[in-house]
Length: 159
Image (cartoon, rainbow, N blue to C red):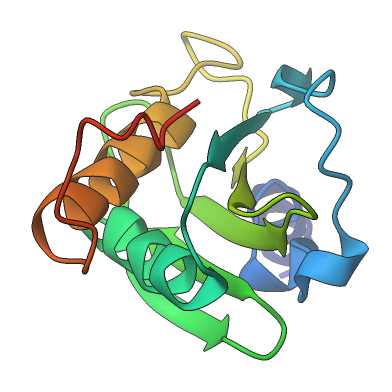
């Protein structure tokens, strides 16, 4: 019985949960220098949406998570964040992602995606099935181009 408990503890210790991500945009550093792989199974990206208000960016963030295959578990417009969870893939046991929005002084919004995967050392090591931040950003862009009130997609709102 002790061996079974020890094995379960080891297996579950590598799992990631939505509680491990920041629960508001105020807790996030939007420094674009902190991008790419920033830890064991942790990836971050930042981009700017010019001429986009926080409501549109928030709705686009939720759409981006959904389009990338994440189920939205927590979201708050007041705290400017959305968190989703993705099921098992060929390489990932579980993946959670948070999308955070910050209004910029000159107009527009900075959007940061933080993705964490389970900590495993399987056959492929620390590897992920996709570039999750880029998949989420594709959904954000798609939402803004097709669903939002921004009608001129040539305004160069993506930086």
